[in-house]
Image (cartoon, rainbow, N blue to C red; front, top):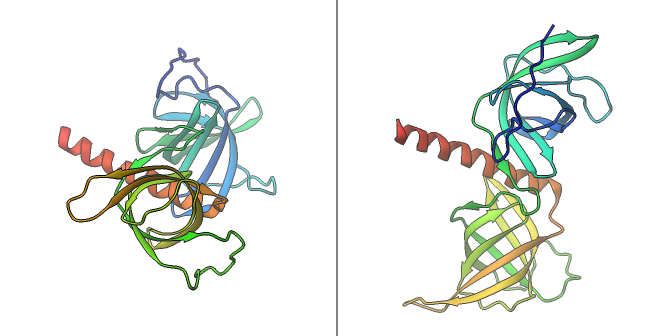
Length: 239
């Protein structure tokens, strides 16, 4: 049986302050659509925690493989903490099944309200939508425009384009994220003309409207994995 030791509560990016019963989501690294649900039992260290065995959406306990890695999310009112984990062992404590897990990478905190924002340049295409009743996914008859992201989150993006769009206009976005074409409507909430020697350029902030959960998860996964790679490179540079 496990002998749990209370850790001194810490704040900031540390997970040591997370409380028992914090909701948890576990998913396969390459499949965000297959999600299991669990709760925190105890934080042992920055690298190891105890959770209850995860369950599927039918309430059935799922036996996770010791040979696979999984993505884990701790959902708190201060943000979402994400990491990659593997199973260390299964056990019973006071008659309750528990699972000891180990983190593979340092934990990343994602702010719940706006989502984590990644600075990255991605060329994409969009249409300016004047008639919100248009249902044709290809937006036939409308001019295809081009833009380049400056940053992105699962709630919106900042981008530049030579297309003059008005504040409050809606656009249909076609954005390639890891070979998946994310299609969603966006609303222009900020506009600024920027200096360019070649042609007129504008900087915009766009809020996603009615983006599907599938595409939100795809963007979150991309941001998370990109941050992991950036951390590895940064760590390598420091060593």
